[in-house]
View 1 (tube, one colour):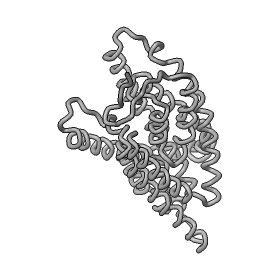
View 2 (spheres, helix red, strand yellow):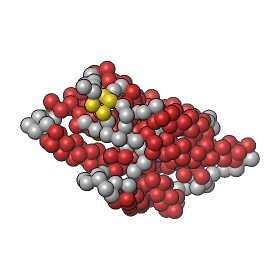
View 3 (cartoon, rainbow, N blue to C red):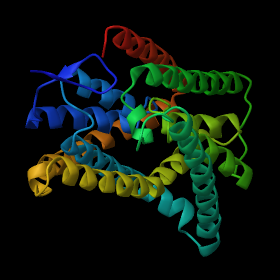
View 4 (cartoon, rainbow, N blue to C red):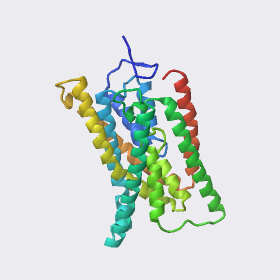
Length: 306
């Protein structure tokens, strides 16, 4: 008998295979570092593959995929960060203060929204967590659309300023860092609201040069990812213990997850090169159009029962 996802009309019966891992790792690696929401793409891919996103092995896989893309970010941006932020103590201090401020604002806003959702949306569900919301496509579609609108506005404004020869300001202020951190906080509870797309667009709309917005956004990702990975690892070990007492993490899918991290690392590097190229060519707005189209597609999948 086929089981069903909680809250959906679609069943699953497959066990994760190496092919599934590679497919999901490529989706995660490409989408995580492009402004199109990796979570939305991975969730849809899992459902279309007949996999259960809430199982312990899938939870571990997602954690390791994020780890792979985090190392891709470090490898890709290290030279830029070294040249821009590690040349002197003063430049590092300015950078560190802005990262800490943005991350703190992210935590306050993100955790605040998470608590409100858990207490209001899931008030009648015992032991409910924000993660219970993530597999609901009816929430993912509008989040994708919101990110698409923000990216589209930032991209079109960029093209308009380029035609008028309007130059962006030269530095990232504390106010800019706070705004970017606040927008990143909105991405924590809502799958589909692209973290990179929203933060880079917020920087661009604040007048920060797009290259600076990009490097700062992914610096925030490096700081945030270990926190998210730690949270998800705790959820994974708890779920594994409850659902499969006595099962080790290797049996629970650790080797598959390590493979996924390696593939996600490679896909992430490719995605970053593509992203930087499009930023330089003034094509940022096209990511917004893609998000709007993707939101429509996700809503159709929801209507179809996924």
